Amino acid sequence: MEVDTVLSTSNIYMLELSYNPTNIYMISDIIAHVKYFFKKTKQQHPHVDDVILKSALVYQYIYFKNYKAYITIDEVLEENNGEIGLIGPGNGRITRFLERIFKRSNILHSHSILHDAFGRFYSRYSSDRGYTYAIPSILTPTFIKRSPLCGQISGLLYCVSNKIVV
Image (cartoon, rainbow, N blue to C red; front, side):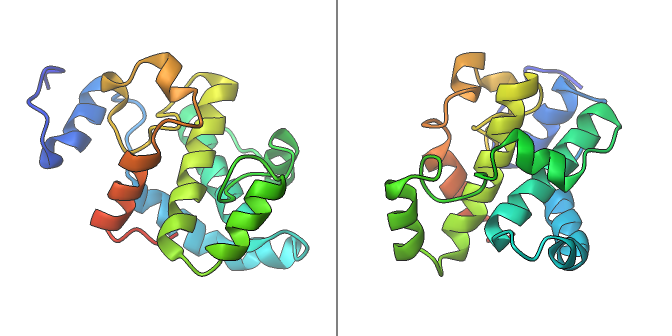
């Protein structure tokens, strides 16, 4: 498969395949992982917010796909200070305000779950898609993959157009 494949909606996955053939998976694989493990993980971590727990499960999946090794939810939460997957920056006043306003928005939460998991994983390990998870890695410069401000519009459009609910 050639890297210079013409970009279109149907070719995005093909570009990912040609760029990194050892790390083949789709967002639907991640959602299946979260749905399968969420209930059991919630029982083990009842004090953790659902959105944070789902984002930790996404991070866990990305870690496994990149390193073929297991990372526990506790390790994920520790690496990310328990602040992963929330709408807004970190866990300050702005985030708490945005979480109250958009608490029931599945699309916004789905985007924030994916955005934070991919972005924080990339920032820590310099591997996978980064904050711009909806754009093929080969098209995204490193400094953009590391920036939490990037990937907001493309990620939201991706979640809306594909009806993504994590």
